[in-house]
Length: 368
Length: 140
Image 1: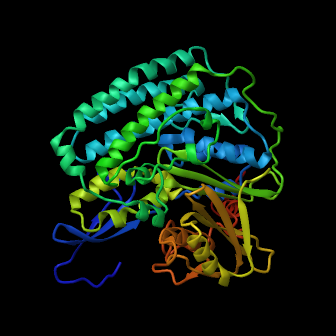
Image 2: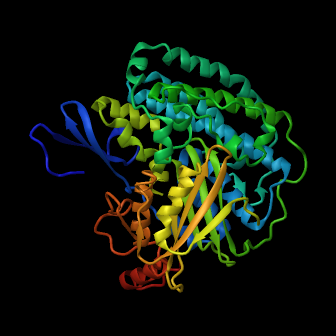
Image 3: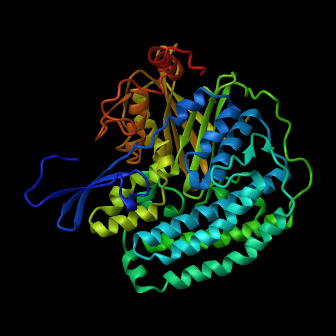
């Protein structure tokens, strides 16, 4: 950013400790009155060197670390990492494990979207939805807890499949959730969709077109809200997603309200996928044949999944030893956050808060 | 292990921009990822890795080029490369010519060294610190 200021220009610092910057994001706003004329993100406050740690750990030892990037969707992070190492090894998880992975990952998508909805609504002034969202998120976390003992950083999957058999009552729990949850989405929508304040704060704010998304590497709900029905679960299916029927919701204007509608519909579609998966969990082993010591052959591969926030990719280079030679994480949040400047230019300061909320990033993943 | 993806290895960094421009004209207009790998024993120690996507048929191409500590920036072709190149600069110390705002992104501006280089040994640094300050072996 240019440090020479015009007479009527004001530089305002927001964060890194600010309730609406979701963690430790610092935004330097350049203002003309209430209008944002420029913006600079300062990130890295949560940098822990995850990629470097990966080079110093064995393949299996690194798996719990990836949960701590995007900690509200730890299951998705783990799935992406396991799929990448499995591809390097030439191993495919057995059908039972794949079905369980789909159920838990979709449940995690709902949990992640619920946290987004609650905090986003809180940012623009509606306090109640947060409590409602937390109430239902709790039910999802209970299923994780019963399955693997952890609620947040689950480490639910292992390279080659699952470590734990599905616990007794798992199917009933998931079914009960699928029965209960759609009515709750209607409840959130009754609170928000027709609410005049909600609409006026979101409509036409932070517009991002498909062209903008392509230029800036933006993926996930932001890209879909702009109007491109692109979802990796359909485009490059993994873990058996091609077996399930679901729609990819899209928006038309690419504004903050569209991103809200898209995410709400995504939660309904996740329930649809979970219902299909839980109705037909194959029997059989939960682990593929994986050597005790994981030592993939020399090579490299990139595998990506549709995480709740967008394309989450892992690029791993193996030199045939016990540790990966290089682990690169392609975080969706990092690239989506880069679009903040384009979305916020010309907006009001209060809109910046709504736009930060609508991107739905987690700094643990942006900074790694 | 089979990856259903085309890999193109470029002869020099001078080809990066023309190649990505050509691919963009062919529909590969989405830069998915840009990163680097360090091979200290090679003549050009770094390998830049670009991944581009075409929405029409969901195909991807990985473009690789060996480089020393300088490379041309592709921000003019893919504006999204801005932060990705800054991260590579931060972590590997590769300077991108033509980048609009080349400075560290994840680490503080006064940080010494580039952590993802192979000669940046975090375990050795940890051992040295523990021995100097606590007088014991660190156990890492």
